[in-house]
Image (cartoon, rainbow, N blue to C red; front, top):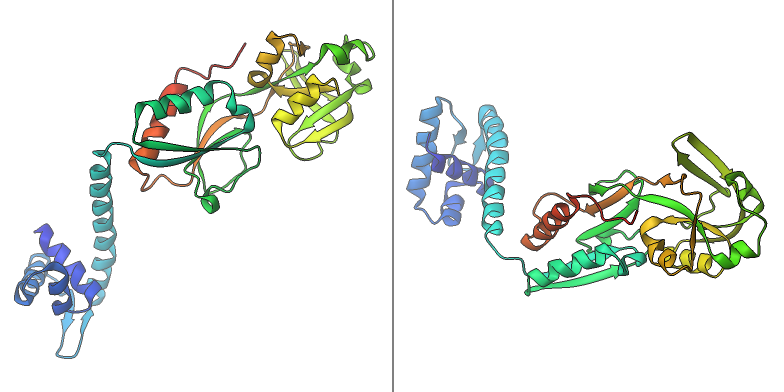
Length: 299
């Protein structure tokens, strides 16, 4: 079967007439009519009912059109994607990540990608809020934790963990904290934007332990939670990557290192797999390649 005959048939149906299809395709009307007739002959069925007043599909023609039009759109989409892949990344890419990403490997990775493509402009939105990607026109987001169900596409880059920590100032002015069960007598700083019932679920090789604490601060900003912990307001359960620099400078102390909390993972999230621009596709591929060797969390 001639592929061109199929294309002409679909255009005739969409235009509603041979004349309309001829204008769209730039063919003589007689050529359009002939190609449809040749298609019908090759299939051995009548696809169109012709009259002086109107053109209509036969039942077989309707079924054939619906199936073939979907296939044609897939072919056209594939052609567009192949053509798009030949282009070099350029234009604006809008990326969102948590406020804590201003330090560490995510910042380094984004800057490295922008350094590879001088025609790409990065618009970076740092926020601890769960920004609506579609409503705000964000191309890609980095999310940490356990993701809620949605229509967004999520690629897991690796696992993340939280560890207990406190400032030397807080520890020196508080009751002894030589056992994880003693946390019930201590103030805690909770991060996440909502009350957590003053409970932490901790994992260790010996199993899971749920411990309570006295709520001191509840905040939806990771940076604020870290600063509150450094200021001596209480014990906090924070990402190991975020507190690493504070541990090295003795502003924070890690507690009960045999315990941690697996909070899901770090994800690369974007609205759709289809029709990604060359720039967004290049960025996604770049980050996936970078994370393929494992996320460089501090140990």
